[in-house]
Image 1 (cartoon, one colour):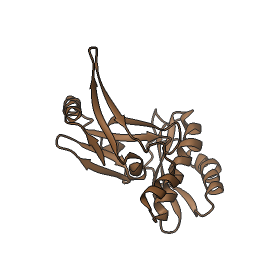
Image 2 (spheres, one colour):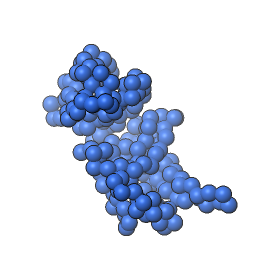
Image 3 (spheres, helix red, strand yellow):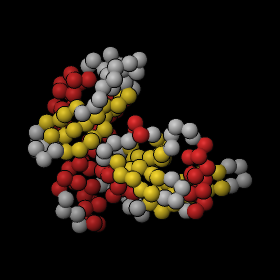
Length: 200
């Protein structure tokens, strides 16, 4: 899926070995399928991983990627650019800004669920999470049930927040069902832990 040059793999190996608790690498894309799409490589741990994440194994480390964005990472490449002053990892993903329909045309996919999930992911990143991020929270798409329910998970300050259920039903679910009337509803599957991080 993602080609990583040998020099970049060695560099990532050193970074991972330096970390004591964050032993995984994760690749994400903000605003996938749009002109402002941005790719990011970050450290992760087991708590950050979701059941929609897939594992891509390399010699020295594993990388986790949400299966919803895998097609945006086709033909992607990670390289290490070295100049006289510094070293910099570069992730090039030529399809990151492609719209879902562009990808379907290229790959002739007939999986309606994959198409719907990609549209939902884009909508959440563009219209739901910017609102939640004002308070330090966000939601991630987990999966779509056979009965048409969209399972989501609250992260950040939304986890454990006393207003999360109200936010879900009065705002998030209404917006998503208005945009995607084929869905039955939106369900929060978060294991909430109230703490100082919680907004309310």
